[in-house]
Amino acid sequence: MPVAVADQALHNLVSAPAPRAIEQVIELMQQIDDCIPNDDGLKWFNRLYLSVTQQVDLQPVAYWKDPSWLINLDVVFAGFYFRSLAGFLSGDPGVPSSWTAMFEARYRTGVDRIQFALAGMNAHINHDLALALLAVDEQTGVVPSPTSPQHVDYQLVNTLLNSVMPSALQMMATDTLGVLAEDTGKVGRLLAFWDICQARDLAWYFASHMRDLSGAIRQAALDAQDQITGVLGRAILSFV
Image 1: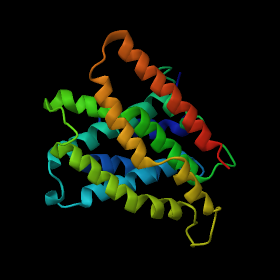
Image 2: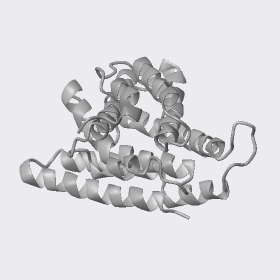
Image 3: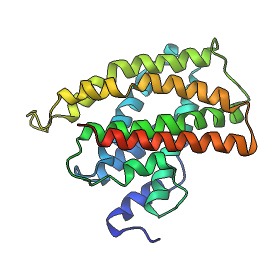
């Protein structure tokens, strides 16, 4: 299926060669933000993801136990988002249900920015993060344990998220003049409904589980996770 004219510039961005450094990931997300209008729900997920990635990048190297592993994970992880978006825009039927839940709702009216942001985070973390962890295993030959330096860094990202997420979502609920644009009470209700740090913890354990699976059983587990994540994404987008 040909790419819609309105999405051609966006498709060109995300179908280019994948970023290989955290600086390139940030630059691409900034270009996506510049490319799409405010009434495209994708903008608000992308902006939240950009904010989180910038916070990780701003930390001094000494903050991390294994900075090269963590940055590699961030770059690999972001690639799943860019590829899913490129596939959706070009009509690829293989795009995960996790992502189509949010992509199909991009211009739906009556959905708050924070719902789009969390629906995207739901897809990216609940579907992609375990796969990114497994991909980094293969690249590095390191299979991190719950007591490893890599897991310490993974948990440090949770600490950053706890400090960034509420203020970032609150910012989305106000317009450029600082005038309240949405019911900001929904921020707290949504964060109670969907906990990003809990989702990241579950992704870690799901990756550990997937390391012991192969073939049809492994694919069945991935398919079930994708379907559950898609249902959850649609629930976030319907939240009132």
